[in-house]
Image 1: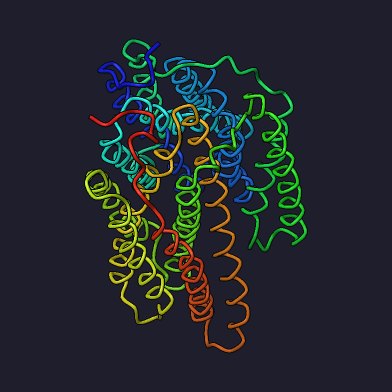
Image 2: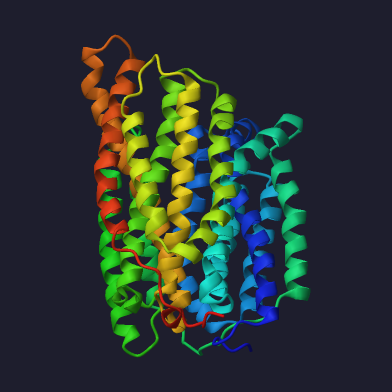
Length: 476
């Protein structure tokens, strides 16, 4: 096994394999959004039933990610990668051959289990093998994967559906996944040291009770087809489960056996960066949900048109991320994060002024500007958060970041949708059309997002670049 104190050539060779594999599994997340209508017709299910293909994927991710802290401590890099890609490949095959909806849903759950392991594995490996003075550039590549893959997914799915069945989406992804599995089998080495941490059987059900109901409840907020008490009950169960889960981890970490080690939060820079990252995820996911909804319902644009409008922002964000990483390595986080945060606030203000006369291209340009600004925010936040931790907490820090991303994304969506729905209902009796009411509701949603974002901007002034000693790998 490689020692964690110095990067190795074989260790650096691990990173490109993990980056490509991560791109494949994240690409798969968003391909379903466009394919749901085709699946509904082919498998004879309702829209609400079909939505479980995305909901179940999200819930599985939320449950599995907290487990990865223990998994990455316990097993070698190569073994974890093979588990992740094998699981993802099996799930993809099951989806491709699914004879009925339940089988397809099970395949998506299996896919999500492999996907959930990949990002914490990638981040932890980078922290173990890349010198502290070059991590920003490599983290920029991760941000590129996170941004470009979801942006390309719906477009790729739409092209495939133009020529054939929804099954071709999985048939397209499967050989790529198997190729990455074979490459990992033959080329991937192990980095870092493993600890024989025993598996705590109490933490597993507590993780399920905590994260699954919480994410599910947040995802139901604003759904008029569901009684109000249903999401509230789910969120209440989730919060109770989360308190119990965190309490259990506090007990276990005293014996160095934590499932998810909360000592990550004792490092100030990690906590500050994670707080801002959570708010940024809330804002970005909320905006990503709100803009297509507005463009379709209030402006009457076709889904394909909307998809093409959103695509340049995701690609621009991905292309800028490696550049941002290199700037971070030279200048630190504040020079990037603070100005970008101000621009995001300005974009939210612009979105709060949308009206029927606003041209579609202005919305697209604003989305591109917002995406570029988030590129200047996410790479520094990932790097600062993990760089502030000692080497023995890298895996747990990566798992915490992944879990927070899932919860914050769901919370941001719930916040936007709730404010939007309430204010739309208030405006409807006083305006001439539903489109005008929706625009009025969106004004308040984006103003609310701007108010929350102001808190994130304040966090940006407290960010600092971790010293090489903090990161556990000396700079060259």
